[in-house]
Image 1: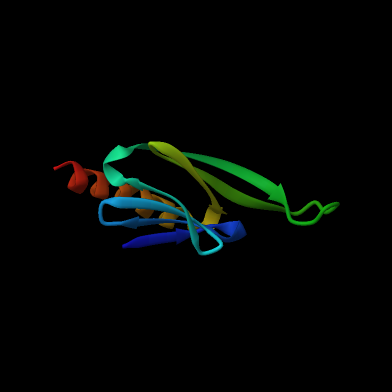
Image 2: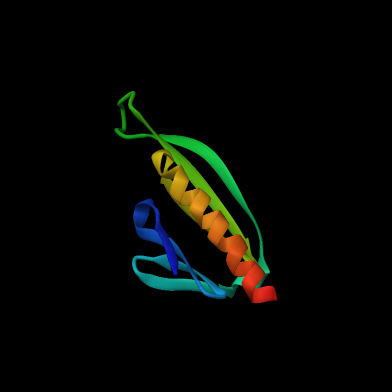
Length: 97
């Protein structure tokens, strides 16, 4: 089982042949891993204070598993996002064979 948590209390779990979207610890969607068809990763930023000049670097991750699951994580956690993509590909291969 692989789990990645983003900001705002959201997360994505890859558990065997299933991919699940969590929000505040409860399931918001669950699809078979063999429906996985790709991941889109975009780098974004947001202000940490309303009128401040400081910005936080983020990664917006969109996973396509029949439906789209979106997750935003801090940019310094890029290795976890790469691990998520690898785990999704492995789960898809296991589920389709």
